[in-house]
Amino acid sequence: MTSNVAAFAAAFAALYAAHQVADHWVQTQHQADHKGQPGHQGRIACLTHVLTYTLTGLIALVAVAAVTGLPLHSVPVGIGLTISAVTHYIADRRTPLRRIADALGSGVFYRLGAPRPGRDDNPSLGTGAYALDQSWHVFFLFVAALVIGGGA
Image (cartoon, rainbow, N blue to C red; front, side, top):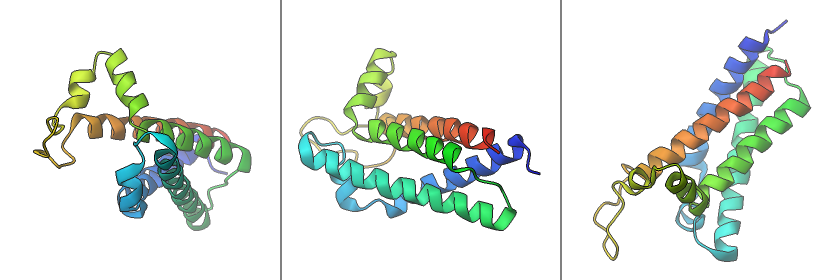
């Protein structure tokens, strides 16, 4: 019998690894370039990214279960992956995350390292927006793993 603690740890490890792969390898350049844009094109790009992201998480969970015998229960897995998917979409649309950062007094950090208006003088991952985006995702992976592990 698997303890909830072990199930949480295994779920978190699987979701975290899947996050790294899905956000940086599975995501297409088109999705990355357009997911934060306003309008239909941005919403579709973000939605397709979140769908492949969520599928990657599910594959990782199934792999862990197959190799370790971790019991997965469909309702907690479904709820956990839904939490991850919805919160990932919110962050990757960019405007909501920026507004949250502004409301919490982290707007200056969010804009740290961003190219200056009209210039492309820092095309890198080393921005406050990226750091806040990734920490948001990891926190909600933690929440998802709690839900999934709690169902063990």
